[in-house]
Image (cartoon, rainbow, N blue to C red; front, side, top):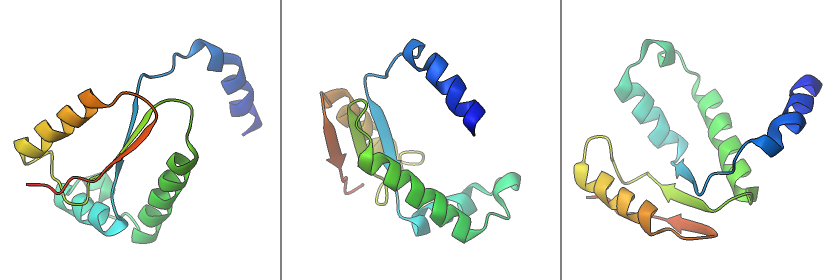
Length: 109
């Protein structure tokens, strides 16, 4: 871990900051259903507790994130993979975002 920290501190000033960070947030149960629906071989034996821990870690990270503008999108009720109208609304929201932190909770189609 110390080696990673040393490398990070060496290169962090050379890495450009993004104009916007987008966090696609969902409840663990929703994520589990999506994993099952995708049916990818390497995800077939994913422990639900592991998925929950990863999800909580991401939520915690972005709760404190302040490096760049942040758009947190609750994806529980939308399906931008299968529904083009959900994707179009998502793109509109991203294009309208300007600065700071914003939470978007779409209702879906």
